[in-house]
Length: 230
Image 1 (tube, rainbow, N blue to C red):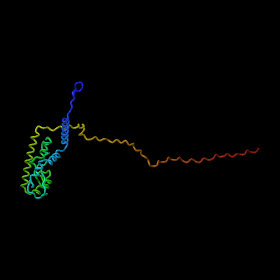
Image 2 (cartoon, rainbow, N blue to C red; image 1 turned 60 degrees about the horizontal axis):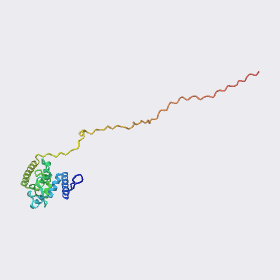
Image 3 (tube, rainbow, N blue to C red; image 1 turned 90 degrees about the vertical axis):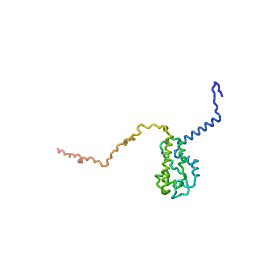
């Protein structure tokens, strides 16, 4: 469509609008993913993964070793825990998709007794204090420790290869005040209260009274002296 004056107006078709909406939705997903803690996201991806479902369907026995105590049910265990993976060198430079791929790495997953898995938690097999309680056979634990060390080295090498040449994204920070390291100034308290007036409660000494003046006598009347008779 051409407007008067030769200005061409582009009319977006339905397909273009739908594509723009899809692009916006994908961008929003990326923003939301960046806000989520990587461990939380990785656990969510793992719980819904085909890899987890495949391990569950792979057998009906604990794949670590001979149990001393059993809960009677199995769970999928990460031989190298997700928290240990998240602390590896360069992990923060991986993309979200790369981090998620570590969460479902098939050779890091196996069936484990539910109570043993809960007790192990984020421990390594070398630092797990109750390991011998659940797996009394020392050979079983030795195999798990060796496998764990092998997987740690394998994943750390994979991460270093992936992030080689990458640099952390600089996040702008608000400028800090110049005196950020200085201790807060202590404001001196200025007393503005008027100085209290001292009230004397002792009785003031009365002024000395003058000596009592003698009472004034009425003036003496002079007796009339009779004149001599002539």
